[in-house]
Length: 159
Length: 220
Image (tube, rainbow over all chains, first blue to last red; front, side, top):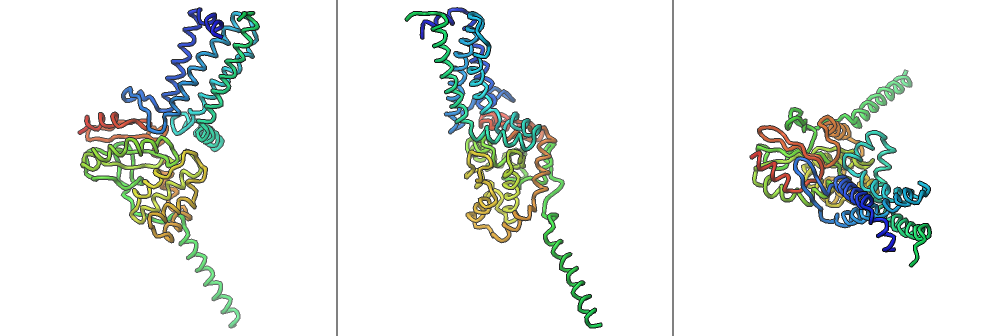
């Protein structure tokens, strides 16, 4: 497993990709979930009772930063099908969307645009934010292990 | 002739009864508000009573939804410190204006606060809603029955409260407040305007006390 990670992340391009994914996902999700405020001043704030949400965002961002570059490596170096990216992308998007639609600007925009359908959707995503994020993390973990498994066979690495 | 007289009498009584009933159940009931009350660019006429000294130099206008979890966070994390340092000291006051958009129970919860206000218990009821808020939207915690039970726990006159809530007496008031939020560019809850002698500052989200302190201190 470590040998495969070393193989992928020995290339600076994949380290850079991983860092970009982690930092951009983390910052966007922290802003959306109101852990970071940019206006009128830059300020970070974790309200009491929101610690679990913060931890899940960190895990989600870290897993996405690990799994997406691994799948990009498969596509670019091993010329695999793009469909094999779906697990990592789906997990990342699903985890990100879960917390986006609460009482903040995104939720308001969705409700304003789609009316009662939007309200039902945002209520669902808000009510089940934590379980959805946990499911997204599980999907990313499964994707990580299946990617490692297939890379082992595709790269013909002997352990 | 007598028969005709009886029928005519019944008809007249029926018409009077119908008119009287329709007038008494009209949703356009009157209530006392100061329609000229504004804070900065916001008409707060239909909002909450003022919390704190009405003559305080600064007014914090909060736009909120009773089902919004970030409003809950702000209510519990930031508001107590603002109350202690600025409202109770007479440096600022606070007005809550409904922006009830999150779920089907949101407008009803907002209307219930004004039914409590009819009995001079607006802030007590407001505090109850944010104390007993559940994290799930529209899961029944703010249903009519639960709203009535909150009123019961505050020892409100339940005949008056039930009549007010069931008749949707304050439906238009809540709609007016939500429109104020939209007109002033509020795009989520909680949203704040801090209105001082020299202007106003807009804040979005459940920002921490340090941000409010910085703005409020700069206005005093």
